Image (cartoon, rainbow, N blue to C red):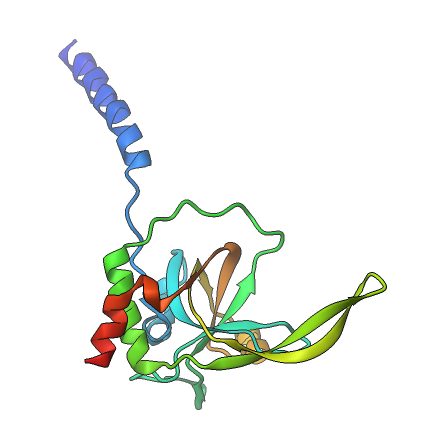
Length: 194
């Protein structure tokens, strides 16, 4: 009889704790591109938040990357040094935004690290105009670079490396990308200026 009561009491404790476990979500600790590239195998199964400069060069492939200009430990594999970039593979169709909460203190700290290794500049973007209901190329425009935080799953395959020119890819829902402005994180910029 006592065993049955203990089992019921144990079940009730688990049931009472379950809503708290479901709603008390742990904050995600963002990582830099260099941190991911230093140990790509470690991040193969768990979704991560990655911080870097967004680079979407104009090309036929419409590829985008998260980049750091330099890493302390470049990725070397198969007698090749890989660039400090992670290819972004967008999930199609876009899923609803993930309910992920990012640790803001760590994000600010990581942003100050990225500020030291990477510079923002400008990139060229083709602007389009409407001509008889069709979007046609109009002219090139210089647009400011931006920091981006993307949440997704790291992918590593030989085919991916050959195709993307990057050591790793981040499979990401476009709704799980957040563009950051330095004004939102003045402490990270101030740390670099001092």
